Image 1 (tube, rainbow, N blue to C red):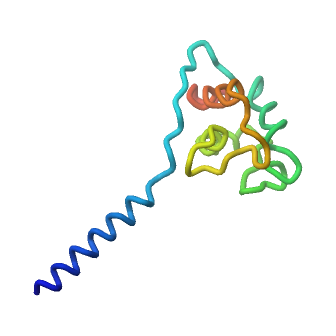
Image 2: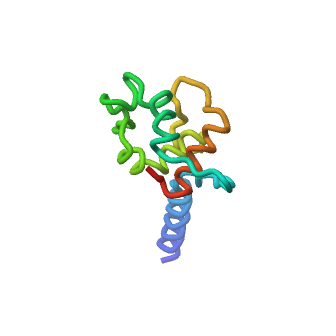
Length: 119
C-alpha cells in the first residue's frame, strides 16, 4: 500500500511540473496609449503592407495561415500580431528574417489593439 501511495504522489508531482511548464505564452505588454488612436485604414494597413503582407509571407500565400491584407483578418489575429511584434516568448518574433520593428511602430500596433481595433 505504501508503494502505491508513493507512486501516486510521484505521478501527481510529475504531472504538476509538466502542466506548469506548458503554460500560456507571455502576456502582451500594455502600453500607455494616452492621445494615441490609430486606425486600421490610416495607420495599421500601411504597416502590415510594408512589413507583413509581403510576397511569400502574410499575403495571398497566407503563410502561417494568415493573410494580413484585410482588416478582418488583422483584427481576428490581433493578439498574435501584438505578441509577435513585441517579440514576446511564446510567439514567433516578426517580421521574420528582419529586425524588430521600431518602438513607435510597435506602440502604434499595440495601441490599435488596446483601443479596440478601430477600422
